[in-house]
Every structure is written in structure tokens, then in C-alpha cells.
Image 1 (cartoon, rainbow, N blue to C red):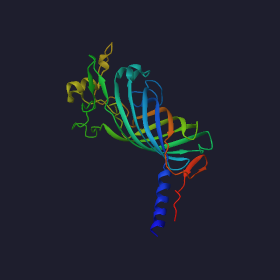
Image 2: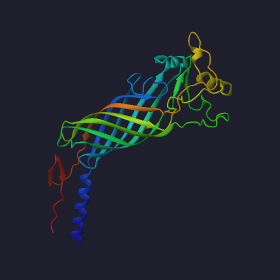
Image 3: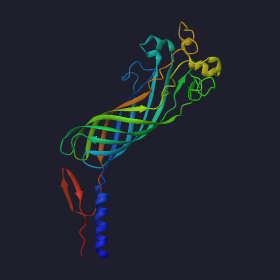
Image 4: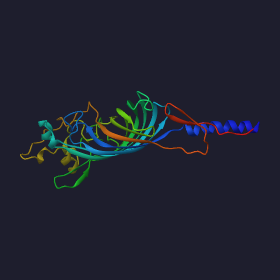
Length: 284
């Protein structure tokens, strides 16, 4: 009885171990942001390089769980805008952005029997950012905590300070090509839906600059740096659009490598291009 139990445990453990299919993902491409300092919702203008590294767990031939760490920079500048009111506003920002996500990926076709397949993915992520700018002397200024729109001031109770670490909802799609069962390449476009409108530190209307600190007031409105200088339009004038949240997105190439699992057992079979190990032979 003990030997039968041992066989059963060994068989189950063997199947659990070797049914696990781990893939290493390396990604590189570009990122961009959509928000108040961009003329278009989707554009390659002012895009930045992006990299990512992660793993996929193959639940079935068509369904995967992915987790990746991404690193990029985002930014935009009103000086490059073709919208005249944006140009007169004269704001700009940059930020280093880091993201860790968990995604579910589904292949439309079985990539083990079809060399090319479209796929879709969605999930949840957490990202960290901290928008900054440079003043006219070239000095760097982090914008979080300056309250450039009157955040956390009693005069504007509806404007709260934003957090530098937040949740996002990634969604996207791509095309995957199998070079072999173990090596695949893909091109994908992934959007990040956000719950903040302050990725760029711009969201709503101008506050009363006299209520801000000197540096916050200086960085809240920068049209007066232009030549000729543009006068401050006054409290309540439009600075951004709070009705639409910011977002960012990636256009990436992905290289995927299926990690080998070595075993001393020789028993195996192949199904749909996948090798599955069987239970080790046990003598009764």
C-alpha cells in the first residue's frame, strides 16, 4: 500500500512539475503618453525608448499568465505643440516610469500548430512616476507636492494631492510568430488605462497664484517666459481637461524563450508539438 501511495504521489508531482511551462520574455520598443500636453490621443511624436523583462506561465497551448517589469521615460512639451493655446501655456514635464504587471494572454490560434497567430491581453499593473520640469535657469523641479493647481489647499477642496504610485489597467493585442516550439517573436501594442489625470501634473483650471508658494506659482503658469510674454489669464482659466484621464502606451517587440525542464526520466510523449513527461517507471 505504501508503495502504491508513493507511485501515486510521484506521478502527480511529476505531472505538476513538468506541466509547468515557463517562458522568458524580453521586450524593447517605444512608449508615449496621452494627456493634456499631447495634441493627439495616439502619436509617435515625443515618444521615448522602453524596455521590459518578464516571465509567462503556459496554462494551455493558447492561454498564458504574464508578469513583466517595464522601465521607460515619458514626457511632452507645449513648445512642440501645434495647438496655439497649448503653445501659449508653455508647460512641459518629464518622468521616469516603472511598472510591474500581471497579465492574462490569449492566442487566437494555437501557436504550436500555426506559425503565426494574433493574441490579446489584459490585466492589472502598478506603476511609479514623479513628474518634473526644468525652470528657465535649468534647475530641476519635481512637481509632486508643489500643488501647481492648488491641490490640498482649503480654497480648492475638490483638488487632492496625487500619489506617485498608482494602479493601472493594461490592455493590448499583438501578432506572434513561432520560430520554433521554444522561440517566438511578437509585435504588440499595449495601452495603460489610468485612474489619474496628473501623470503630467496638469488636469484642471489655474488656481489663484497668490495662494501658492513662489516656486509653485512660477511653475503653474509659464506663458510669461515666452517672447513676447503672455499675461496670466487669471484664476479659473483652463489649464487642462479633467474629464479625460491620462494614459500611456507601449509599442514593443518581444522575444520569448521557453525554458527547458530537465529530468532523469526518459518517458515522454508529444502532443500538438509539446513534450509532456510521463510518470517514472516504478517496480512493484
